[in-house]
Length: 152
Image (cartoon, rainbow, N blue to C red):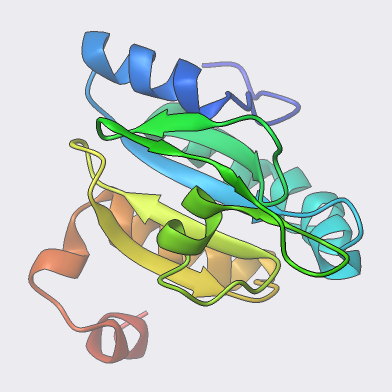
C-alpha cells in the first residue's frame, strides 16, 4: 500500500460517474481563485499525508470553483452561473453550502449525493482528519460530534 503524494481531485461530473461503479462518499472543496484561506488549506491540510491517504482511499474528492461559469448538472437539476455584483457564483455552490457562501467550505456528500454536512472556514490537518473519519466511517449517524471528539 504505497503512500500517495497528493490527492487525486476529480470534477463533480467525474466523481458522480465513478460513484456509479463504486459507491463512495464525495468530499467537495468549495473554493474561489481569490480566497487566501483556500490556498492555505490547499498547502497545509490537503498536503498532509494522512489526509491524502484517507481521502484517496475513502472518498471521491472534488474541487469546485464557486464562481464556475459553466452550468452543472447535479441530482437531475441544472445549476447556472448567477451574476451578482462584481463577482457571481454558481447556484450549486450556494446550495451545497446551505445558502452560506463562505470560503473555503468543505462539503461531505453521502453515497447517494445527499448533503451530510457543509463546514465553513479553514480546517487545520489534525481536525480535518477527525472530521474525515467521522463521516467516512458513518460515525455521524450514531454519535454526536461533541461526544466523538471528546473520546479522541
